[in-house]
Amino acid sequence: MAKVLYVHAKGGPPVGYALDRVASRAAVHLLALSELPAGVAERAEGLCASVVRGAAGTDDLVELITSRAREVGADAVVTFSEYAVVAVAEASERLGLRGAGPTAALARDKRLMRATWERRGIAQPRFRTVTTLRQLEAAAAELSGPLLLKSAWSAGSTAHQIIEGPEDVAGAWARSHAVMTESARLGYAELHVAGAGEDFIVEEIVTGCAEEWFEGSGWGDYVSVEGVVVQGVFRPVCLSGRMPTVAPFTERAGITPAAIGGAAQDRVVELARRAVEALGLRDCGTHTEIKLGADGRMWVIETAARFGGAMTVPQIEEVFGLDMIALFTEQLLGGSPDWPSRALTPADADGAAGSLVVLAVDGAGAPWPDRHVWDSASVLRSAPVGAGSTLTVVGESSLPDGTPVPVYDPAAGANTMAGLCLLSADRPQAVVRDFTALVDAMPRILPVHVPQGVAV
Image 1 (tube, rainbow, N blue to C red):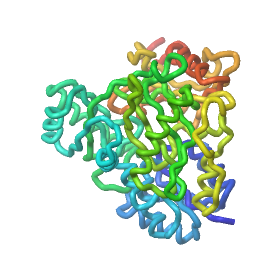
Image 2 (image 1 turned 90 degrees about the vertical axis):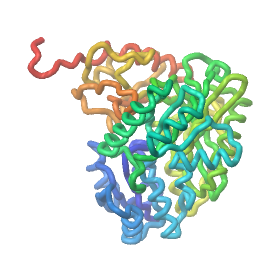
Image 3 (image 1 turned 120 degrees about the vertical axis):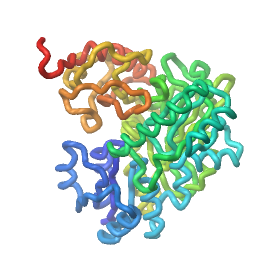
């Protein structure tokens, strides 16, 4: 039986879900660079041929991965974590195995990514790379505000800061650095590149217009094109939509499929194709975010050499019956999996699915007036979802019950989430409807947090 070295780190689809599907195609040897979630570690011991816990802060992560792959005789090395993509790509190159290839960093470092697209004339927001406060001050004077400062290596909307004018520059710079330091402490940071937390870009904020693109209300003004690169050829799979982000740009919910008409979807997919192919990737998943504007305008925001995180991949499997992780594992092992011949549409879907990140803010983005504790049973019991909808809580990606819900921090983004909910419905608009109602109801559903020592 073929052998796969699975490199686990923070981020990506739930590791329990992904492990099962890789194991359906090969014997799995797990190299865990991050702690396995509660409930997964014991199951991994039984599912995997071996489990080794590595040091994420090792000086040479590529050598660690390469050595372990040789020890187990791996026929492929896989990761679904943004933070390990580059290291796994380089290790696969050393081993002569299929992988994202030598240009994988172009799909990870936003500075390199954006510069590549700029040379190819691909539509994107105007930007500048910055590594010092002085460079940020100069860029802010040159670009048209408002601006968005973001880490070149971040994920999950962490370290994002809006700069309205010159008076915001110094504070934004300091805050973004502080968040990157805290993210690294939590394990949400690039594992292979030393000093990655010091690299930033600042970009102009382009104006979106969801109403001209979506068949229904309540959608955000951008989508992601989910796909895969097969021996250098981009293969689109489908589009996922979003609800409006929480300020500054933290994702609240992802929905599969996106309720966009066929002609519009074709244009979005073509832009994603140009963006991905410009990076010269070989064999990898892709997740490409595109901002949608008025009069058909579009801008590429970023792409990644891995599948979308959170529940994007499980959502695709639920509505399209497509096990992307199993297919991709087969691809890395030298097979020819049956990827879709074109991007799938809402007409191809069996219903719809979406995932909601629970943040301590209401539908307008205002903080909850009171602190609450996370309680999955209360959510499942009292969630105001439609009669044809089914709601579950993703325990692996949620806080333990009884944990105080973190106060939402705009700069920390998804780092301040309390839970992750998955919803199945008969159509995309029903997911939007149910999530809108659930966001409004959440402070009424969750128990109020009473600090220790406070009388009630």
